[in-house]
Amino acid sequence: MSRKIKWLIRLSFLAYMIYIYLTVFRQGGYFSFLLLNTFLGYLPIEAAMHIDHKQPTIFFVLLIILWLLFYPNAPYLLTDLFHLSSIDPYNHTTGLMTFNLHMWLTFTNLLVSSLSCTILGTWSLEYVADQIMLKIKLNHTWMRNILVVIFITASSIGVYIGRFLRLHTAYLFLSPNWVINDLVKMWNPRMMIFVIFMTIIQMVVWITLRCYLKANSKIEELPQKKVNNDVA
Image 1 (cartoon, rainbow, N blue to C red):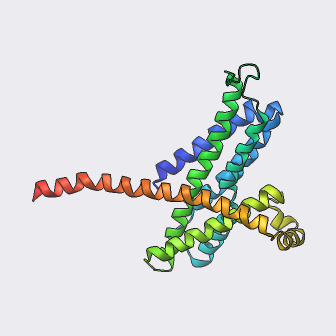
Image 2 (cartoon, one colour; image 1 turned 90 degrees about the vertical axis):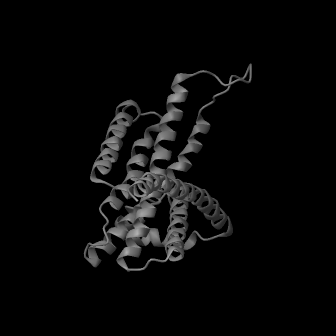
Image 3 (cartoon, helix red, strand yellow; image 1 turned 135 degrees about the vertical axis):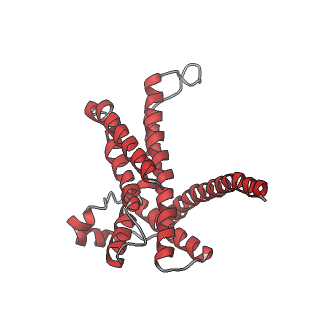
């Protein structure tokens, strides 16, 4: 990712969060949580932008750990879509959806936060996996994909922790004993089924992004091949 695109992403998120602060958070309404959750969802994206396999090993590993701790915050925003249940979109007399612009604005805010953080978070997943493979000097696609699946599964567990145990990443540093105690007690069949569901969702997003990137790279190769054939 070029420096120009990185700054475009940063400024776009900054502008969006300022907008959420002014129009949602300051109003103190039900959806005020969106500001904090979007900020937390952006952190792994920003962390990934600073990771480079050419960095010293210790610094590289610390950044990877930091990214992994915050990465679940990105797909976590998908679970915020359940808050749409607080909106009653239908006219109970006609059974038709009401044309309420404020309702659609709330829908837009939730969807923009969840999609942007999930898609760019998945980009960070791809990028971090590539950087790790470059760092250990291996070029095996199957190993890279296994690494991605491990990260996705770990993030699904992280989403469960954040959604149902209500534990934020910062608690690991503030109250480690309390966090570890809750983490040991959380394992049960229902929790594992939830993790499977979240893993499936993230896998679909990841595979879709992979398909897009491959298709896009092939499209970019076509003009180059045409130029080479013309020269020949």
